Length: 343
Ligand SMILES: Cc1cc2nc3c(=O)[nH]c(=O)nc-3n(C[C@H](O)[C@H](O)[C@H](O)COP(=O)(O)O)c2cc1C
Image (cartoon, rainbow, N blue to C red; front, side, top):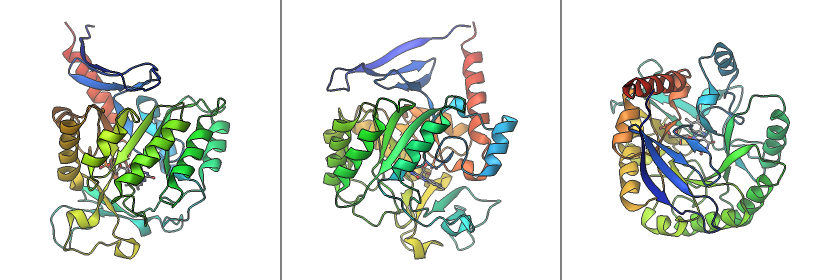
């Protein structure tokens, strides 16, 4: 089998002179290499496979057992944790209370599972706190096959830089080496704080995280944030950028969200593509930091994202309707790429 390895870009990303962040084409396929050497082309976005990369709900454990979900194909971002336990809006006895499926037809009949092309969620970062996550992650590492896991942390409190510093520092302890990176969720659409409107806060959080971290950092941004202010200041601090769901009011400024009582929620999936993919183009235009492209819903979306410049592909809300699609798409993509490079 012939694999064409085209060197595309090589940049020093670490101010401490650690190894270099690079991104390559293999054939026409791009991938991101973090400063610790971890490489990935396919990512599962935070929330896609739960807190530990095994599945967000029991049915997914079964699909994993059947081989329809294969976590080993992805680098998986864990569900976001906060400094303290957070109640959020998710209730195990009524999961659909904070997530709804939606169509892209712009009228009131847009909600329905079978014809949906995206979701709106106002999960609100329900989680038991970062210490719980760390401890369980450590215990589970003895019993499960190795998963390439990225931790995800968030804070919108007054003490956000201090909280992020402490969480990242703890995740960087020498005995917690299982994770391959830390994603700073700088853009939860369901946060009550000012994180979406205050660039200064994001920059301070990234600076604090960089001081505390021995892991590569990723930053998750929203299409509504001011990237002209943020990007120049986080260059050299974070090694890749991922993209969050789009606040409801941004896509439907005149329509009432079914989750209005929870603040409106964030839209993901096909319904968000026009916004998230424009954001990929904008980021590629303005920065050299590798960009992870979201909102894959159909197989063709992978190639479309590559064409607009995404350096890696992320699977998020598609798993809520089709949990098996990311695995089947990645297997098909790998197979087709391999066939294309055969002599
Ligand atoms: C049910 C659900 C839960 C999510 N939870 C989180 C989360 O805890 N942290 C986070 O950063 N993003 C979370 N997200 C956002 C996704 O990670 C992803 O960024 C977003 O859905 C956009 O990607 P997509 O269009 O490919 O779905 C969640 C999304 C959904 C649908």
